[in-house]
Image (cartoon, rainbow, N blue to C red; front, side, top):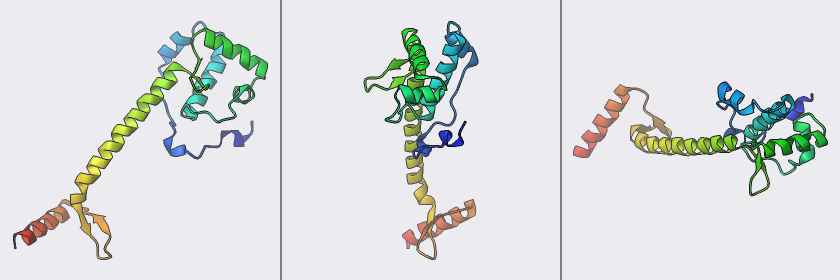
Amino acid sequence: MQADLFVRRESESEMIFWYKRDPDAWRAGVCQLTPEERGIYDTVIDVLYSYDGTLPPDANDKWWSRECNCNPRTWRAIRDRLIAKGKLFYKDDGELMAKRVERTLEESRKFSEVQSSRVQTRWKKGRTNLELGSNGAITPLKTTAQLYQYNHIHIHNQNI
């Protein structure tokens, strides 16, 4: 295979590089699939996670067949069987999706929003633990002693 097929996209910072996979749930979910269907389904799941559920505009049958390393006719036949078995579906915007991937990506998005909010709150609180450097830049206080000294001087200057 060509190495350039696996180049990361521009939105790499927003991508999921790891996802939880429960082998027992996986085996139970694919026990009625043929080996060919399992392989294609596994590839589709990985591709959907790799692209954060937002596929490139050229994600047509030919594109999917390249991703799955099969001819377009095989891809279409297996895709249709996976849809009929409830493993895959098309979203309103016409993109292929799997229920678990959609749910996991939504959970990840919500988690990211919560963590971002926490960081913003912490940053606002942490601003009181900053001092003005000699060059006028704000720098974090590094030790408890520095924080104590800063607060002591700051409080002392307010009381004068």
